[in-house]
Structure formats: C-alpha cells, structure tokens
Image (cartoon, rainbow over all chains, first blue to last red; front, top):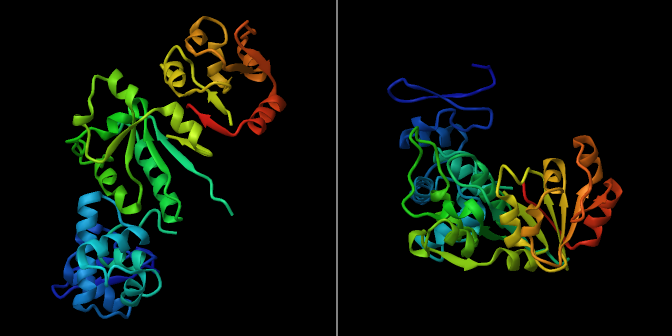
Length: 116
Length: 117
Length: 94
C-alpha cells in the first residue's frame, strides 16, 4: 500500500483501504459502519436525512447498475423522498461540494461516470 | 447558442462487447450536460432491448439495468428500428417497456449530429 | 440537408450494406474507406436505393489494388474533406 492512501479501522479491528480520492478500494466491504467511519474521516456527521439519500443511492445502484449523476440523483430523490427534498439545493446542503460524487462515495458506489 | 440535436445509434448486440454500454455512457454525458440525446437501437442493437436479460455467466454487467434507468436522465423513449426488429423475428412485446418504433433513415435525417456505437 | 455515410469494413464479412441501405435517404453520399473499398467492385452496391452518390477513397483503393468501377467514383483525401463540409452530418457505420 502506498503511503498516501488512507485507511479506516472498524470497531472489530478490520482495516478498510481507501483510494487517493477517498473512495473504498473494495466496494464489497461497504457497511453502514464503514459509511459512518468514512464520514468521520471526511469531517462530516451523518444524520437520518443523509442516510435517506445513501439508502436511495444504494437502491439506485442495485437497480440500474450505475451511480447517478446529479440530474438523475435529483430526479430519483424527488420521486422517492418528495418534491421538497428532490432539489439540488437540498442535496447540496447535505453533501456540500458535489452531492452526486460525495454521496456515492459514502454509499460505497463507484464514481458517477458521467458526473461532470 | 442553438444547441445541436444529437442522435446516438446503438448497432451492436449487448453482452459480447462493451459497445452498448459505451453508447449509453455517451448518451448519459449528453444528458448530464443538459442535452439528452435521442437514443436509437438499430441492427443488432435492438437485441439490447430484449426483456428478461440477466447478467453474464461470470456476473458481468449487461446493459439492461442501465437502460431501465435512462428515463431518470430524460432519455426516453428507447427508439428501435422497426425493420431491424422484424429481420430478427422479434416483436415489440418481447422488448422491455418504454420502447417506441422508428425508422433509422428518418431519424438520421432529423438530427444534426449522429454518433454510432 | 444530406448525410455522408462512411463504410470502413468489408461488405462481404458483414451485412453492413443492408444496414446502410435502411439508413440512407435521397441525395446522401456514401464513401467507402479502408476495407470498405472492397465493395467498389462487384454487385453489392446495387442493393442501395437510387439517388445516392457513391464514392471510394482513392488512397485506400490504391493500397489494396482495387480499381474504380462504374458504380462508385474515386475521391482523394481533399475530396473526402470537401464531402464532410458539403453534407450536414456524417454517420460512421463501423
């Protein structure tokens, strides 16, 4: 392992490796605990509102085998969580910088390929 | 600035190569930039629209799951070339939902830019 | 508002010309390049509808020893570029 990659240590001592962008190296090792640790590592605190979106992303990926770019994330959020939450402003407030990218990372999805 | 209308034609079958996924990724980039292209399946490309597809034997991803998600990117309907379907002994009720009939020559003539996969 | 169609594969190992025949419109141009020039001689081009201009890229014909035919006209690289400029769109049937 190169020195500039970070790791997370779970409660049971398992070491989880991140790549240089903070994504999981092995997406299979995702668990809610891993998401909490990743968020902590990035200085974020996950509230139930964050978890709604993370769960939604995991469903999206299981169904469509792709990580949604912003536009699709907003649309899927509107469909499942309602008009009020289905806006880029709301998602931006939960996951500042780039909601599609940050939320996908925390949800253990690959990078949204078409996220510009 | 007037935006150009874009047609993405998928002409290869799914599973055997990554052409279908490449075509869909290209369509998704257009959609992410606010310009959802028209997506047309022609020739062997219509085979990507067959309902009830599964992953490959080794668990490789096909393209069917992605196709189901395209409406979230405002890429709809999924157009198919009617003649290509008939040539392969297929009918529209064997395709996934959200497909609509088209003629490839008309589709090409209607768009500014055509990308083929 | 015509289209330039590019054919770069042998029409004898694929059914690319049948596919093309369904995709062309009146006044379109078809340019054979690379292994597509093998369609220049023989009868396969007759499958295309009337009213289509047929071209074969000279450089690719010369390198393959393909001679011109009655059905298609030779065009050089500069002519190829001119065709892309005079048509509204280009479709590559690879």
